[in-house]
Amino acid sequence: MLLVNNLSFKRNNNIIFHNISFSVGSKKIIHLTGKNGSGKTTLIKLLAQILLPSQGDIFWNGKKIKKNIFDFYKNTSLIMDTHSANLNLTIGENIFFWKKLSSSSINIKETNAILELLLLKQYINTPVGYLSRGEIKKLELSRLILEQKKLWVLDEPYSGLDESTIKLVNETFINHIDNSGMIVLSSHYLPQINNFESINLENYADY
Image (cartoon, rainbow, N blue to C red; front, top):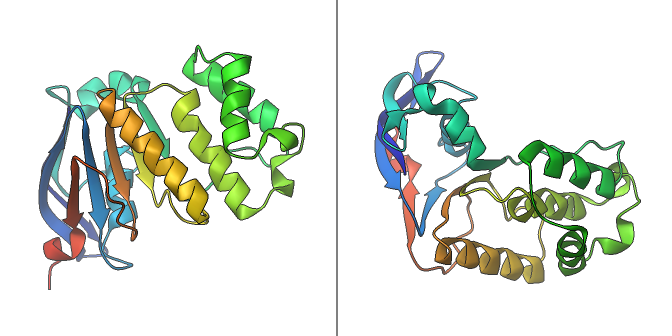
């Protein structure tokens, strides 16, 4: 379980948000929403320990996340609204790297099936830099399946996607929580999914 307790973040003496608390356990999705500048990406970075809070604590499986960081990373896939793929490598080469890094047991047949669903199979030998923004986004999201992690943390996962891919992503989210997974995502888009709790960061601003 991921537990956020009274989390606050200050930038240049400006409080972005304060006293946010929530938990995400098995079969649950936390949806972070709010206008631009309300701190959605900042909170995602705090969860991933890219940034540190001004106040409050984050716990992973009953321990402060700093003291349990290796287990946290072992069980977490983080997808930001920027690409992690190497643009100079092909789709296949990036996938090979991600699978090795996460010690994934996904085989070639399963990998090809994922790429087929995402309409990327034909580009497997194409450098990622030649893909469109939407295709790169789909490739990034393929990591959710490739890495086989329990907790998915995503910043704006729907941006740049067409309607059919959004539907596929939602189905993937449903399958993940049905299999006892956990998801934290930030997005302006509000999908209709069960076990979905929205937190509007504007309610935690310091007006």
